[in-house]
Length: 138
Length: 379
Image 1 (cartoon, rainbow over the protein chains, first blue to last red):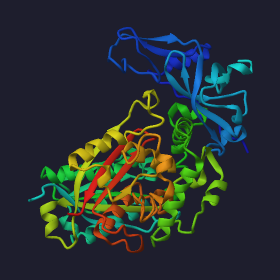
Image 2 (cartoon, rainbow over the protein chains, first blue to last red):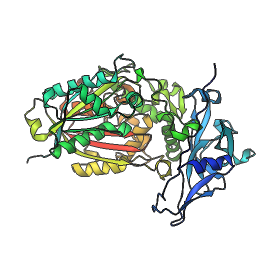
Image 3 (cartoon, chains in turn green, red):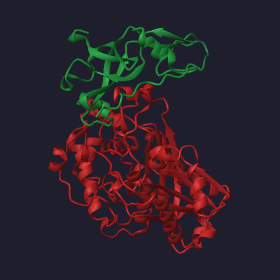
Image 4 (cartoon, each protein chain N blue to C red):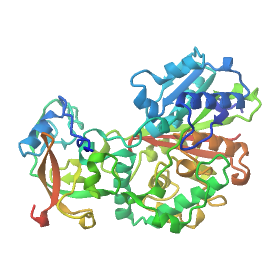
């Protein structure tokens, strides 16, 4: 029996530049030209000062693990072969946080504060920004 | 002195179970009938209806407003109606909305109902969270596991302390005839319970239930002419963190702090006045965080607070006295309101908190984003 396809992002007019960046190997965050705030997920105005003067900038790709959870059950069949897998909140050096996966190490070696670096995992015609510990060849 | 405002004049609920074999509509109607009857009112007296579509109906019914179909089936042409969409905060928010509507004179007997039949729908609790599903973040449990891990790391909260909450609530469910899970749970049972999303185990998670609960809100004056002792809605508040992960504290603190401050301020009460707490408990860790954020203990000390039987009957703060979502069954938070009212009426038999006069009820939902607080008082 075929497994169902893994769920993929569904970019819209607001989020498309983020996912286009991933396909080009760029991790992008939004930045405000008026107050200097930087954030994810995508917005249509600066969430701090409501300025329209916002732009996408390329993040360096370095971050740290703020917290993580280890899935021991498959809520979606496509993830069953990946169990146990790690979902984490990563804080980028630029400030914004995002939900992602920690790859390249077993779950028991993931910890809060772990330095990680982004890499892009091609999947179903898109690319997911996932993170690998910097000590593990990242 | 005349006390203005609104009362809960009647409460009702259905059985709770993993598979009742009835549509959610039928469960909702039964709970409404029970609550209206409990209030000593007749169907024709109801002139307000506030609902929440259960998860099963939220998926199945699409964009049709839930109140429209339920109200039609109940034969109601109310003067006020709405469907609340705050997730697990909806039930408490419904009661607040009813109190506001009754207080403003928009209606005089407002029914609030939550009911769900997840057994009739597939995968209602394993939804993906938007684009985050691409990373495998599924279910309400994902964000809660992320939060629990961080709380444990920052404050030294231990698994045994989360287990104490599960064990205590199961003991309460053992004293609750309608509870879905009544067999005893020991701390050892808890510690060998399997991981779902680590650090949360099966025994940390709420039950999945078919069932419904409802309450009737009337003016304090109207409640005086009704057969039951009306329970006064003494204070309420809401606070929401729509910024999600961008908020600094999001993963260790809940908007319960702001919501509670508003409610306590309205009622002229403080945490020390609360005799019984019915705290939304989709996961054990959420109970622990609320104890801190409501000010029952300091931030970071929730783990120590739950030790020594404080949450049990006879403890300093009897909590989730019917077993809560963890053991009584998933009543969407409305069963928490029902239990608080019964405690304040003194109807709880073996699980009665002796002399209970003030209850705090909370709702928490949509991941970790919404929160609502209700303070109820027996005058």
